[in-house]
Image (cartoon, rainbow, N blue to C red; front, side):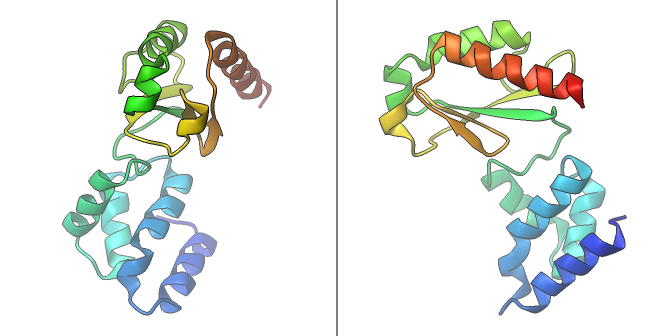
Length: 160
């Protein structure tokens, strides 16, 4: 169950919408921030708030790349695999990330910190190859830049 303050915030957002369904992605995103991912139980809870079925929410969640239906790591890396990123070295950088994190695409690192997922386009083509980590975008990627970002995130995780 959601804490009362989060539930109240969601109910207020829904009440101010012309139609509750227009808040579905925002509701799932906020709930996911609390739970870590959208479990079946969270989908039912969201459906109850929005007067939608879990199936209707599932249809949205499978379309939207940033709603997670399985547990994910603390840091979710979406690496762009668009044509432009691919032309600018996406594949070798992806291999480097997989080795560095000890994970395959779609998986979570053994330490539980990183989940690596593809995304078809980040709209950051002028800085390709690119990735987004927990809503922070990184472009003009090189192996060295990736190493630096991952090192900083590991330090943050161990400091907290």
